[in-house]
Image (cartoon, rainbow over all chains, first blue to last red; front, side, top):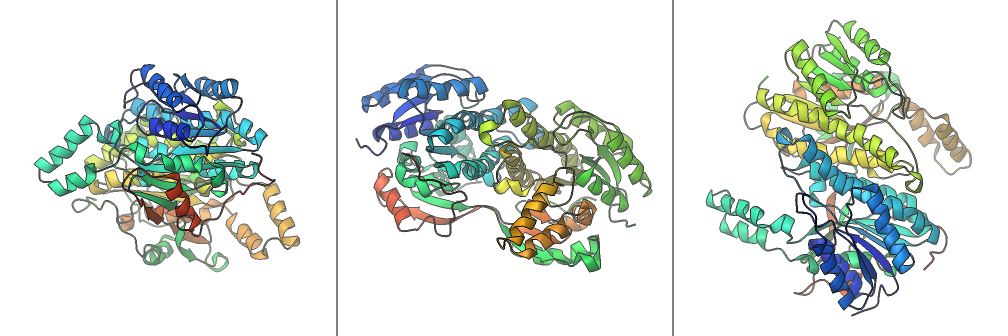
Length: 313
Length: 314
């Protein structure tokens, strides 16, 4: 189709379905050879199958590039090493790493089991570290690399799966730090917050939940239509593909919102209100002093979840 | 000293030394009973020692409150359960939870071992989750709670310990998420980014480097002055945490504060500051994306944190 990534070699995790698959195909369409990594499990991380990765490999090959599958778990340090190795041994080197693999186990914090915490953190956060850790020395050596991680709008706080949010927050900080550490070596590291219809965001269970909200009067039909009118992942796949091109060499340490309908830049958190004091004169902070500076400090602040009833003491 | 927290019961992790100790003592000074949790490890997480937690207990008691020690590992789900249970069993319930425990194993990404990653994530991120998970149902039941987590400016980037930074970023998002989930039940969840002199930060080499840069005119002398004023005992800002733990802070929820002896600042949440719409009905094309950048629309105000040093190889 096009050749903006001709001769480049990419590892894409979670490439068996959804966003990962769409990204793998978008890279292949621009001429990149692809290592298609997918354990073939369900949205909750259970099960395994080689068929998802194999199908993406076939589709990539139809676009005229080389493609090989990897069926390991990204949460496994050695399996991640094998994914990067597969790229080097089959294609010669690794230029592009796109971390998309992810699972979800949604529970409120008071019901979240230790296992549901551990597994979600392992797949997203450790999985992203694992592949970067194995790609970094090679990219640093060749003084070229493009790393694109997948986070989520849940990185600014989310109800119903703090494990998922915390993993995504961790990946955000990991992205910033990798950008700082590897930028000088010609390696960029960015992340996207995708918004797309996938089995995680628009599967039968999710849609059933949305329909319940309409039936119970919590949502209007219009709200339902608005929420479910989301383009599939192939609509946004060109955005990570662009970040993988030579042209994007100056873009490093950025978070982008990516959807069929829009493309946005997320500014990191920054100090917005500061109260400075002369501690030579006043000594340690006292509670009274803290209390006094609070109104200025909280200017513009909106409580994300105020108490439902008057707080008990 | 004060009585802002009289009758309240607190669990403080990492309470044996540094920021955790300063926080535990600040809470005790305001009348709170304290469970002082500390495994007594070195900065890198090695070893164990019961004396730091025991010393903090003795110091808290001097302020006329009850205090007990817990010597477990915050990274252990069952140890966290035991520590929260100790608060309930000894004092009646848990009102305040301060997650301060942390370690550091700095390495650049290309040298970091799997173990260095795992251990730092386990202590900071899982440790913070473990205690929140145990305290949340109790606080929800009583419709009252104050949770204060410890993150770091390393959450926004930096070099040499991305394990630490990633853990702190996870804690920030966990703070934001838990604030939304627990807020309706009268519980607040906030986080601090502290600056203070502790075992972890007291590195003479850092100061020497700043002194050299100031001498060469590469850095404004005010930077050094500020550093000297902020690199003091964490008791300098510990009352900020005590305030967040008090009834007066009932409406402060889901916020991240920089806290030093000199300054308190509030962080914004990340936000979309520039947006470009897809000009076509179909999927995004690389041309449309490129033009979004070429017009300097998306990256307005963006500064590359680490531009390529030599000529980038192709």
